[in-house]
Length: 66
Image 1 (cartoon, rainbow, N blue to C red):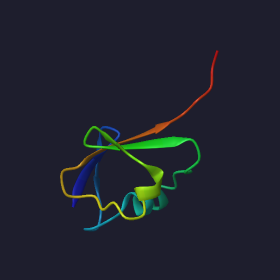
Image 2: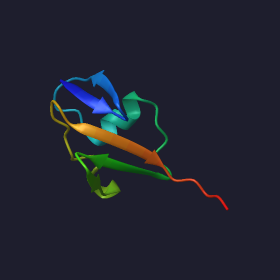
Image 3: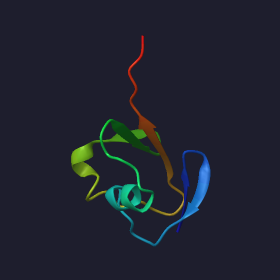
Image 4: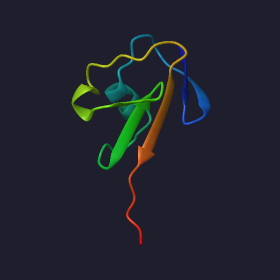
């Protein structure tokens, strides 16, 4: 399947979960938010939320500043 991840297209196996995507992309889980098709997905659902062909995924890292 093909998704759009942070604006770039990425090919993934069918049925990949958000948790698996983070692992495949070597993304540290601390301090991130994941949005799928303009909806934030709670961290507690990352392991059970499967992505679908055409999904638009945005991964945002929280940063402090001042």
